[in-house]
Amino acid sequence: MAIHYLAEIIVTTTLRVFVGESWPLQPRTRWVLLDEEGRRKADGESDALRWPQADVHEAVLSAPQANCVRVAMPEKFSRRDLPGLLAGAMEDVLLGDVAQCHLTPCSRQGGRMDVLVVDRRRIGNVVAQFEALGLPLAALYSELQSDLGAGRGWRLALSDGTALLHRPGQPRLALDAEGGGPPALLKAILATRGVTEAETPTLDVLRSSDAPANVADWQGTLEIPVAQVPMDYQWYRLGADKANLLHGGFAPARPTGLGWRPLRPALMLAVVVILAHWGVLAVQLGLQHHHLAQAEQSDVAQFQATFPGVPVMDPRAQARQQLDGLYGARGLLRSDDALALLAETSSLIGDAVGKGLKAVVYTDRRLSFRFAPLPPQGLDDLRSRLEAKGLRVMVAPAEAGDTLLTVLREVTP
Image (cartoon, rainbow, N blue to C red):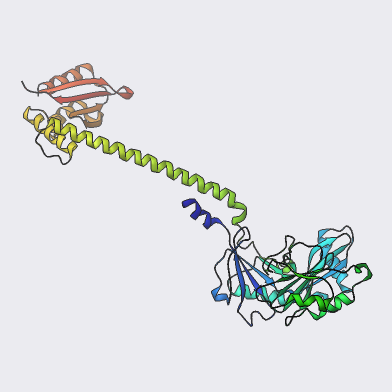
């Protein structure tokens, strides 16, 4: 569960919005939320205030807002020369001002290249609208790049008054498709097809859920075989060779929301390592708790065996209290008698050692003094005077040549 939850945090989601010709004047539009693999997680139709949150934001221009034009290009050229070559090739094809057109190469076949042509002002308006919404675009595509599936014949996708025509080896076209009949321009295209297309084409029709059409009646009108494909047309499903329209002056200033994707394998590995570390810590804490519980039970048992009839509250503290009572009854220092022992010995130690005293430690009812070495006669005299007070004195060498003198209260017979 924890791995799945953390993986959900790391996975990048993409909000892809359909931008029709009347957007944003008519703010209500279709959208889809995709996971990192491009699978649909949610979809709907609403204004921007009700769009779901996502890491990446993309838009798809409706097909009529772009044209796909095929132009002749040199066999070899450098990438930096491409904008100039495209502009020169478009001078003989486009009727309007090429400077007002945004040109995006999308495919190349030998000495010819298919180029998407979009009004620069429209792209600028769409990019600015998404920036104003606080949703900077990472990519902008054209519906002409939609995935229409595989097939040897012609394919026609119907969606909300628009038809997208795909002919093998030809640029795609956007046709008006009002009503339930075949597009009028499709009839003209069939009537004027060249001699190289003398073989009667077949037409496979894809429909979106909101595209009313009685495809069964088309065959008599078009006089070609017509069949409806079982697959539904989805505007957000783009081809593998899709081209991002945001390049040149429209390129994002920085990658938008794409930083997780290259790092995902490393992040997932880090998540697994962290969870494994947490698991090891949990096991260690469980073992420590078990050992502490066993030690506490052992302390209780030992206390009850040593001091029968005494209620058990805190076995270690109670045992120390009982032992202090026994030590005191026999003339020994209690565990809290360090001050008494220090008061009894400090004057003698101070007179003999003076400023040579370096450390004083009280442990296990023993008071130890560490000091600079004394002459043998001075050390013997100090030992004798301490023993005269009924103390047991032990002398041992310490680090750096110092002397360690330990005193302990002996039991008086």
